Amino acid sequence: MLYICCPFKFSSVISITDLARNRVIKLMEDDGFNHNSDFVRVGVKSGGCSGLSYDLKFDNNLKEDDKLFEDNEIKIVVDKKSLLYLVGTTLEYSGGLNGKGFVFVNPNANRTCGCGESFSL
Image (cartoon, rainbow, N blue to C red; front, side):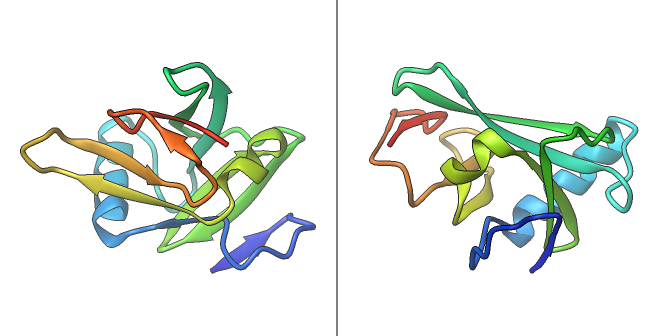
């Protein structure tokens, strides 16, 4: 894992499984982004039934408080406020019968909602 612009010494910030990587690349291409130069912006915002929810989108504009990382050939940007909530998180992709989509496996979450889209610490 490559860490760029981050003063913290975390063993892992966000890792991406192979299945999630493949889906990210496909979706980025579909939306006109290039996974070699653009990135996935991951954040945490207030909301959801457990108090906090994940925010995931493609971007190509770095902001002043962003931290840029790379895992499994995907560039990941996290804003400074969300960083501590996401340390050690794995981004997975589930395409099973119960629904399709990205799943955050966050070791920092004490409680998650039934759909897995929100959490609390």
